[in-house]
Image 1: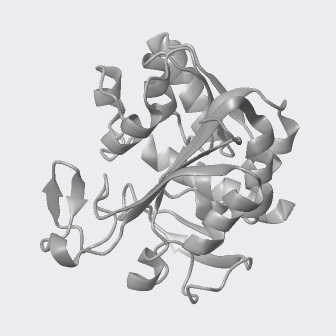
Image 2 (image 1 turned 120 degrees about the horizontal axis):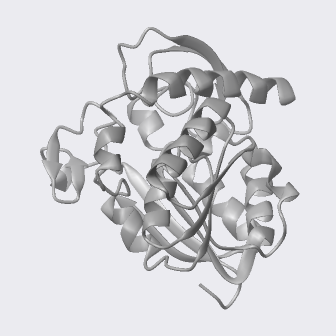
Length: 267
């Protein structure tokens, strides 16, 4: 497993080099005051002022820093040293208080229990986690008594519509098997001249929900969405107030899901 994480770390280091200067992330706009959090995220996160927030798989921290600007006490984690170094550079340059750590999401048990009011992760994150059941158990331990987990993620159905878009060309119910392949380019710049080996894991929607339930967390919100903040697949051709969607919304496929879970009796 350590070798797989090393391989994925190198892949994300290569992505980060490209993403930092990409139009997709548009750091200049962020530095002018733009909040990078999509509306759905802001709605579920609510008022974060004074809340202790752990942002998992934060990349180079634009969303983490946006949360800090809104008053959150934020810590961002990512396996890429390139990404975390850039996040720290931006925090210092913008004089935004936030902590960034190079850390593997598979090792959350190393953090102190009961530390965070919000644990947040979004958009293309779960396919990099080999064991969602252990992930959910670790998250429950890290949450404060009134803490909550917020996940906003691309819908697993996308891997049926576009095989390989999330985690390789396997069946919907194939899971717990790492899918290793060579990837060229990156979602932020599909023409970029990079190529790397990576391993992802495909998780069905049932597997994702069951991992939350089995951990003892109480599911308080679950919704499927026909919009995406980003035009991640070719069918998303129209931009609506709620995000990118299909021309015919009545026959739309699900593109995102969102969930909120917390300790028993609290969210």
